[in-house]
Image (cartoon, rainbow, N blue to C red; front, side, top):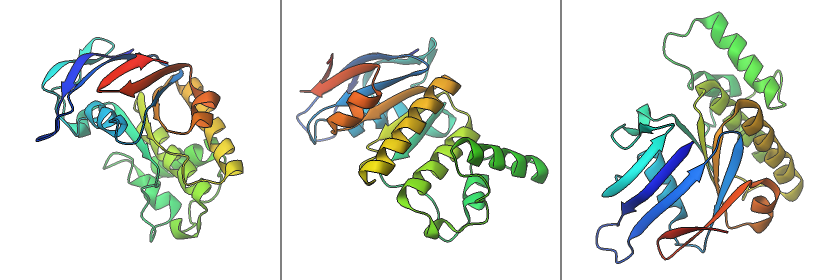
Amino acid sequence: MLEADRLTFSHPGAAQRYELTFAAAPGEITAVSGQSGSGKSTLLDLIAGFLAPSGGTLTLDGTDLILLPPEARPVSILFQSETLFEHLSAGHNLALGLPRGTPRDETSRRIAAALAEVGLPGIEAQRASTLSGGEKQRVALARTLLRNKPVLLLDEPFSALDDSTRATVRELVRDLTERHRWITMLVSHHADDIEALAARRYRLEDGRLALA
C-alpha cells in the first residue's frame, strides 16, 4: 500500500495549507478530483519528491519515502504532454529509461517486449515526431514498463487525446495496472476518466482529501 497520514505542506507565501491523508492499493487506480488550483499536482509532486512536506508520513509498504530523493523513489510519472525527445526514435527514447550499462542485446529485447505490450510492436526505428498523440503516450507507458517501478502517477494524461484514442489509452492503463500490480494514482478533472478507471476516489478541497 501507498499511504499518507497528515502529509503537510504549504507553498511559500501562500495561505493554503495542505494536510493530506490517503491510501492506494496495488492493482488499482486511485483517482483524485478537484477544481483547478485545488492542489492535485501538488499532491503528485509530494509523492514524487519534487516538494518536501513539513510534517506527516508517506510510506510504501511501511517504508518511509520522505527522505528519499526523487530519483530514488519507486515512482514513475505520466504527464498530459508526453515527455519524449522528438528528434530521437521510439527505441532510443525507451533506451534512456534503462540503467546505464545494460547490454545491447538485453536492451533490444526489453524494448521490443515493452512496445509489444503497449500494442506498438516493431516501431523502434520510428522517429518520435512522426507518432500520433496516442502513440506517444503508449511509448511513454512502455518506458514506465522498462523502469519497473511499483507506483505510477498520472497527471491529466488523457486530456490532449481525442475521444477514441483516449478510451484506448485508458483501457491500456487499466490493463497494465492490473497485470503489473502497480499502485496507480490518477489526477483528473474529467469525470469520465474517473468513472472509467477509479477503484477508489478522493476529492481534494480546502487542502484536504475526502473519499468521494
